Amino acid sequence: MSKTKKLRITKRYREIFQVVTKSIGDEQSFLWTTKDSKILKYPVKLEKVDAEENRIQLHTQGNPKDIKTNDILFLKLDYRDAAFKAQVVSISGERLTMMFPEEVALQENRAQPRYYFHPSEGKMAQIVTSGAAIGESENLHSLIVCDISEGGIAFFVPAKLKPAFEMKSKVRLLSLDAFKLGAKPLGEIIFSLPFEIHEGMSSKEGYKIGVRFESVLSTVDLERFILKQKVFSLDDQQIVRDHEFREQVKINVVQVRKELEKNVKFKKFLSTLDTGTGDAHYLKQHIHLLCQVMTGLGTRLGWISDRSIDKLIYVAYLHDIRFMNHPHMARIKSLKEFEAIQSKLSADEKAAFLEAPSYAAEVARQDLSSFPDAIKILLQQKELPDGSGFPHGLNASYISPLGSLFIASHYFVDYVIETPDWSISEFIKEHKFILKGQYFQKILQTLKDQ
View 1 (tube, helix red, strand yellow):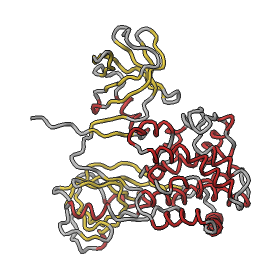
View 2 (cartoon, rainbow, N blue to C red):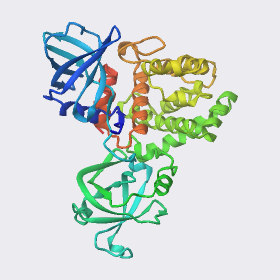
View 3 (tube, rainbow, N blue to C red):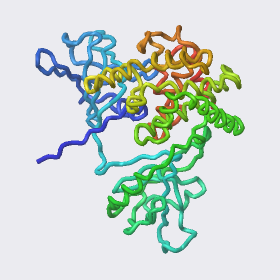
View 4 (cartoon, rainbow, N blue to C red):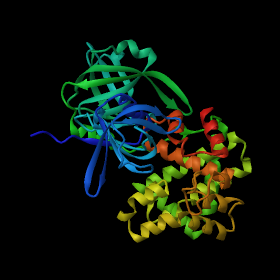
């Protein structure tokens, strides 16, 4: 009996782009759709990928009469059994153009689940290199863990240490963070790739070294390692490099919070953030990072003054107040995402999401200590440049500069939190088709210039 293939959904631009480009010229791909309860398949060959225009060009065998512009079709690729759904943009004879996919299901080649970490999480491994006795300190190395599974580990090696980690040489894993391993697995280096890690807005060059264990790592040791909680490091993600500015923002956050706590409703919300776990803890991290990203970007753009910093911090704290009883709803980024899952939500959850911008704006309107423009920013927090946002469906021409700053910063913060190996260039690649318009272009360019 054949084993069922494991599939994994990816939304990472780099991975999707690689899968699609590797399929160019492959004649084993096909489109399929359903019509009148029948599955219709059409063999196709990928000819071109235009990432700038967000398009994929295909050559069909014949001219399928059942396919029309704006149809949503599945495209199945032979490479890693990848499949995705996308919209038909245009048809010209046997050539068909589709939208570049936002997510792809692909075959998972790994035998065990693999866990990825960002350097700011502080996940460390202590290893000893080949041929050394475990007690020889000169061959001991404490290295940042990039990813790990029961079958192997990858870690970051600074360039100066690279000679100690040659291909096919042996290494032994001694400990993970503060957890000393009972059975210390021996492994062989199977790949070495140039790699860089981010430290603030700068980066450190070195190598990502991959090791395959000769015997699997204990499940107990692995779970103990990956479940260790560590607060997301805000300083590592700061947009502005000026240390004095960063410290001033922290002071401003404390001052704004003190003012908010004078209001009973705000105090209850802040208490939920401080004492909560899981989604509430995520919401707290999300707000803290949003404070720093918005003020940092706004300062570099020249859109805010020292006196405006408190306003942006105020907005960051207030924008998700409707989710006080439903913190998990804060993870839904857009109306499109909401509509895809709304059938699974309760009436209260649906109301919380759809009311969030107007609710936050009304709270600010009734707050005597509110700031000029805060209401407008809060109302525009879920708008999008193409007009697909809510509550008013504004396009880029009608979204204010600070509203644009909030929207772009919000997307960036979610991306950083969700992406262990995030990079500004990848964020821009993935979001430049969403964040369009004069103000958004200035924001992305400012990010790019870091």
